[in-house]
Image (cartoon, rainbow, N blue to C red; front, side):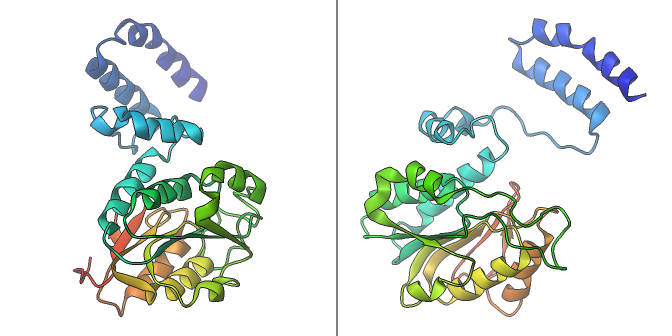
Length: 257
């Protein structure tokens, strides 16, 4: 049956090639084809101006993400950090992977009139062991990237950052006396997400932003639960983003869901 469906879909390829210059017509055909395979998938209109932003695309290309699935999340991070231009405090990231998000944060820091240092926390051994509060999607060691690659990718900012190698939250105490304007958490699992928001919440300056890359993914139910549990008694609530992430602004009272 599946083979028959694929064969039937292949007959549309010459049509698609023939109309490739008509973007709307081609897009509508792609949607119809995909609907046969993934009927629950929701497409985005292909008319978004930021897709053609040269500087942003150059940034994506640097990390080989221009054709990946994270472009919306990268754009959101680049936009949200602009809200912290006049917020006092350093920046931090928990879970750096290859350094793409930290690169954007550091780039923003170089343009800021407020002197800022960037603090990166990562095991450089991939994810820790999932708990019973996490989905079965992840396993210990997933998303492992070596410290050397991150240092190489962020080399131009070497005089503006510190890498803290170790499992979260073991090295948080080293920055316990600092204030933060922007914190990005991308650790996918319940416990390290809980540890991160618990530590950084009180150290976020008023107007500072806490952005969780994993909030809203059904593969990261533990991370979502950790955030919601912590904010239950707080005036701020997480704003879920259409890219699968979420954020809140410190001291900005937010209506519940």
